[in-house]
Length: 243
Ligand SMILES: [Fe+2]
Image 1: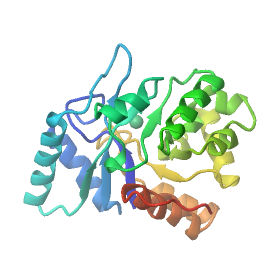
Image 2: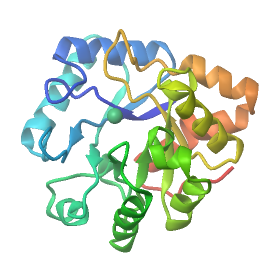
Image 3: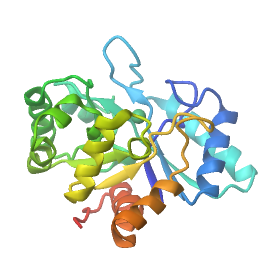
Image 4: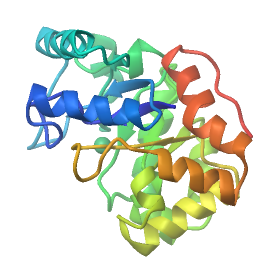
């Protein structure tokens, strides 16, 4: 599996609080079948985590890779960000203050949970018009997606990909998110499932049980696309596939 949404970049947001914690997260991910992780710290959140891209982040990821190599933990760590999407996001990507997933055409973007759909669509259209393919983080957690039928399809029509959180499928984020995630999977609108892990203990990078659930409830082929095929393509800047 390939995990394109994980707060493993330590000491910069509400995810891993230290290098040691980040190592524990990577070791758990590998043990549970994940062979590559994109480190996606929160960034560009007004009044909260700014986390504009800098050498500090590269240094942290290098130290994490070195610590993992020293322990013989063979897992790839790629750069990325979970970008709080604003109208300035395209410019900030072009200036290098924000980055996409492994410097691909795919930025991972999040929104306020109660943002209006029209505002979300405008920002996504702007990113697409600048040549990006936005990966919408946890669409099932946004109020408008549950309240407005056709919202998920609308984002796909704009040219986005939809990334479901594994936690939404085990009930962590409530019934609304579970139902919205299940509807996107049932309609084959979901493109990727990722951990959105924050710790080795709660909201972990272990995706194995949800992989099994998707195999049982849908098919092995769909699970393979959601957990491996598409996220690997994203990290390699290749076209993703629909199921
Ligand atoms: Fe996240």
